[in-house]
Image (cartoon, rainbow, N blue to C red; front, side, top):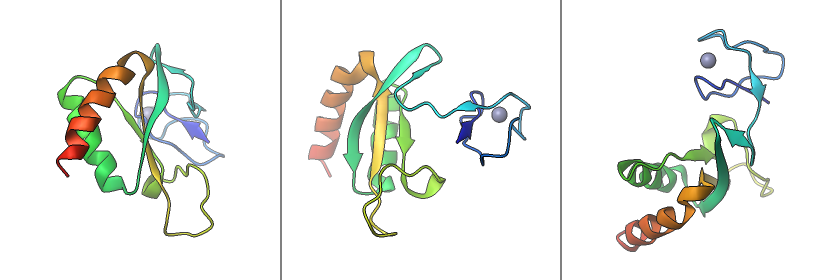
Length: 110
Ligand SMILES: [Zn+2]
């Protein structure tokens, strides 16, 4: 799936340029370098709500993150049903350790 490096949106296969900013779309960035940052899979969460909460907590600490899965048209694995789709959150490899600490603290309080 093509992906806009500026807007960070994913588009349909037949689209080559971003309708928003006109940038050339690139291939989706699974495990690849993005803006010179290497993202790695961090946690799988049971719902997008948890993922959003974790993303916010990480951003408060200055760690960027990417949410994959659920309702944004990016599916991460198939679990045989249409309703139970896990959401995964990716963080820069260099921030992984710090992200772990933040996630541990945050998930304790849920
Ligand atoms: Zn764009």
